[in-house]
Amino acid sequence: MNRRKFLRSAGLTGVAVTTLPTIIDSFAVKALAGGDPRLNQLLESQDRILVLIQLPGGNDGLNTVIPYTDPLYYASRPTIGIPKNRALRLNDSLGWHPAMSGMRDLFEGGELAVVQGVSYPNSDRSHFRGTDIWLTATDADVFGSTGWVGRYMQTLAPNYPTELPAHPLAVQIGTSTSLGLLGTTGPMGISFRDPDEFYRLVNGGGGNEEVPSSAQGDTPAGREVAFMRNIARSADVYASVVKKANDDAGASTVTYPASDIGAKLRVVSQLVAGGLKSRIFLISWAGNNFDTHANQTSTADPTIGAHASLLGELSTAVSAFMQDMKNRGFSEKVSGMTFSEFGRRVAENGSVGTDHGTAAPLFVFGSNVNGGIYGKDPNLTELDDRGDLLMENDYRDVYASVLLQWFGVSSTKAQDVLLRDFSSKALPLFKSPVSVQDESSSSVGFISVGPNPAVDHVVVRVRIESTASASIAVSDMRGKELRTSSVDSWTGVGTIDLSGLTSGTYVLTLKADRAITHTFVNITR
Image 1: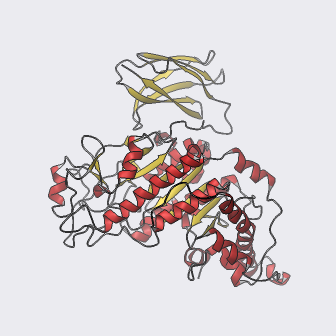
Image 2: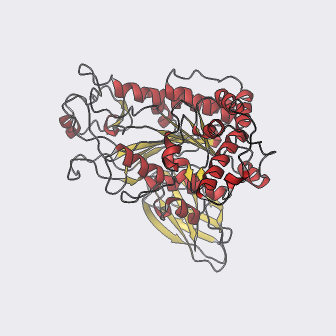
Image 3: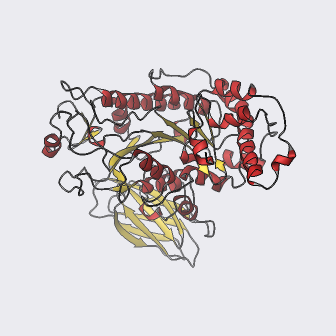
């Protein structure tokens, strides 16, 4: 078995992959005393957290965000279509599945974004291939061996796991390590089901025997031993850190739903509240639950059934998690995102279900998320040659938004992580985007924007080099560029004409040579 297969399937006995080397090799490695101070400083200086929630199996987007004014929806789904009068209103043309009141409330509070029609060109309808594509952030014809999260973590800690920070870079709540967390040297994070169980397994996994030095040379076998040893070391270092965070968190402030995803989000909340400084948490259902080929809904009532239960679990758990984070004082530092390998077919099948499709909505949530709907309603008239939805947004546009705006990664590093440049298509998903610029560029940013709210114009003062070629673009919340204006590079002042634009929030994007940064302006009429 090769290394990648081992890493992804090692949870045979319910033991997290990162603890397996301790047991297999019958030795434990002494923990580092406090970790690499440079990496510790890096984690402490940037405390934003992303929670990724995978919906495995391919979530049916049309029964999640329902185009209830489109007669083609009901014609295509005479049995499983959600009745218009049962859907929870999202806007004049779309509705939530009735099981999703929790996420509906987040949306109405401005803390949830719906990104429509997310997929990638030439969508692959295979579970395994589709999942790999989303986790590796590759094109359909590219087979990646590292994950986009793993590559991002490597930009933060290029010498990991030889040099370990005091806290794990990423955490997966589960029994095996996702391909998404793999870097070129192995997992860039740790995985476990339960903090206390993780601690017991690591500390009871064997003695302190050393691998003979003859097995550690620069040979294939020696390199594999070193690889496994580094993973074992990360588990050994982090077991006590994880347990301490869990113990320090105290009791949850809300009641989480009694579901697999609810229990996992509760663990994430405990670790964040207890002071764990990990950047990314990844959780998923235990099985391929969203693969609803048959009996997706009840034949008597399409609003209940397997899919409704899954959406109810998701919505209730996310709502509880965000309320818990708010009660504990961490809501400003946490955002989350759902993803699934594909959507389902437009037309229902003969088994009261739906088959593998293409594009579907995903959700981004959090106090700093710029809520709203990004993209057009599903177009049930213009379909691909197999009768599936066309792509509205590339999933890597969303990843770019997370990297550039939430984590403040430079456009150059974002391009390295996503293997292509998606920065120009990033959606303005966050209320207070981190200033984004390349390391090679000068310090660039907005100094003032006023009046704000504005009526017919706004004057901006920016910080740029006097030799820079600078412009400011005005975009709506779906990312559509509406107009541009130049900036005087000597004074750093520009006036932007807003006449003709309707009331609402707009994104101002400053581009000065290679640097890009964002802010917002509100227009009132």
